[in-house]
Amino acid sequence: MKKSLKDFSQKKRMYGRMFILPWVIGFIIFFLIPVVQSLIFVFSKVSIGDTNFDTEFVGLANIRYIFFESAKYVDNLYDALISFSYSIPLVVALSLIVGVLLNQKFRGRIVFRSIFFLPVIIATGVVMTYIQGDATAEAMRSGSAEMSTNGIDVTAILQGMHLSKEITNFLVDFVNRIFDLFWDCGVQIVLFISGLQSIPEQLYEVCRVEGANKWEEFWYVTFPMLSGTTILVIVFTAIEVFTDASNTVMRQAYTAMQQQIYDQSAAMLWVYFALVGAILGLVILFLQKAVFSKWAT
Amino acid sequence: MLKKLFNGTLRPEESVLLRKNLTRGFVNFVRYFFLLALSYVVLFQLLYMISYSLRPESDMYNPSVVWIPSEITWHNFDVAIKALNYVDAGLVSLWLGQVSAMIEVFVCAVVAYGFARFEFGGKNFVFFLVLLTIMIPVQMLVVPTYLNYSHFDILGILNQFRQWTGIDLRPNIVDTAWTFYLPSFFGVGVRSGLFIFIYRKFFESLPRELEEAAYVDGAGPMRPFLSVILPSSGVVFLTVTIFSVIWHWNENYMAGMYMVDNKPLAVMLDTFSSAAKNVGGDSRNSRMAACLLFIAPVLVLYMFLQRKFVQSIDRVGIVG
Image 1 (cartoon, rainbow over the protein chains, first blue to last red):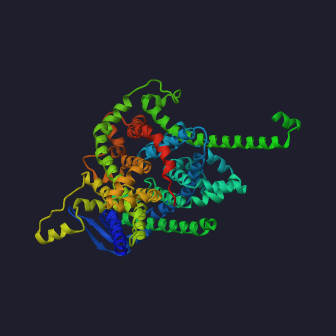
Image 2 (cartoon, each protein chain N blue to C red; image 1 turned 90 degrees about the vertical axis):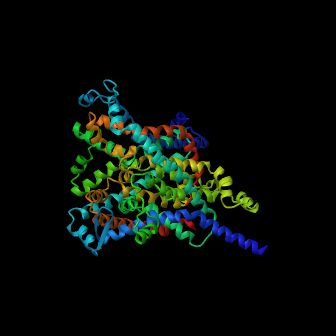
Image 3 (cartoon, chains in turn yellow, red; image 1 turned 180 degrees about the vertical axis):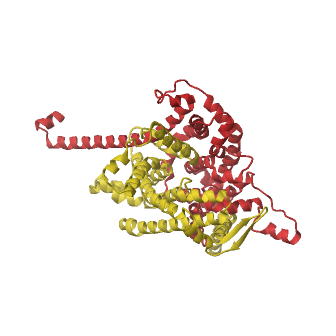
């Protein structure tokens, strides 16, 4: 009896490996090998022949090039990181709010939910480029901000307040982006709703018995119970923003790729990725240690 | 009750009720206002596309035309269908993207089942690698991948063979559907990592008893998966399928790189402007018509599945 139990658990271990074996093979062929090759590109001079590519080790030359000789990389990197730093909190907050609202019982929520998923279908990279390009063109044609999404000439107001030009630009960009950002929220809202649904109803009952109000309910039950979903949403949003084709660094790297400068474009992307990854890692660590764990007790 | 409030004759229990009603009214107002405002952002864009795609180009310079076109014309759609090569490219999207989506939906479930139900050494590390595949963008991998596809080889075996015998058996799979089928088949297709994550969370929430019963009866590992897990996972399958279908339909980056002759719709849309110039007019109107034609199939599919999908989100339950 004992032997057969041991056999069974061994067998199950083998079954488990069997189930994920295809993935491991795929990971090596379609992920690990390209990743390593693209890392090699960063430290090499790449020349593409008809049949193959040759790499020649050049150390940090590519990285030195993009930082000190490339015309715009540092500026682009700065722009991308700035837009990154406000896009993510805004998208996460907006989709959390919408998720909570849509999760409540009220008349017409099915209709609203259907509408709020539409951005996932419509806001594909390509369609979005056409839409946004058009909105800008329209605003310029009519000579006013009439067709732009916010409709108020924020620039004039801010200039009237005698703020420095950088702050003005930042704020204008910020307001304009809020509406654009909503287009990036589709999947996140879905993730939040399904996270909200998995919170056991008993916790809310306890709250009601204890006499907590809705606000306390949100901060003491909903928010901590969503910690896992929130981290997933942050990571997902980060990737979306990070790989967005309209992103300045992405655009520069893509242009370089089209000119077949693979080594420098790889260096641009990897430096960018390493920076974003490091920031993201710190943010998640901070959230786990300082914010979410507070409620865990 | 309000009258009593102004007269100052409101009894205490009535005032509590009044406050409750007012709060509820206020919350409802804020909720609907907020949701309607955001719905407007989405629907505005859809109406904008429809309105612009139906009007002649001359309406652009007619200040009296805001939403309703002066005359309805199908000219823009004609241009868009020609420039997109709509039927052929649509078919490519189907056999390239959607077949790959179906493979992905099934394979990711199998892999996720392995993570959800079995214990083995290094499981957590391997799952970390799964999450890593979501985090590294395809843009970083696309060039080496392209070069590998042009001499496709599994773990260098065929290359060894070439060095020994001088015969190059490595196939060139660029511009074939294998560039999409193969990654999907091995569970590393378009955003497969996210799907494995979603499946795993769902499978872990299912009770184990039925599978255990199957094992006691002496079934192999595939049996419980096929006859117990699959039938009870309709909701999560629907969610993953919808995402996978949409993301495959919209995928234009990799397809633009790997496909030369058979370009799917998303790639055709990307290069629409230059194609439209050749067939009689690249205008905002024809661009909007092209966008509409592009999203139409997915939109129609979504309309049919939307009620089920919206309900299924409730039951998938992703817990961190």
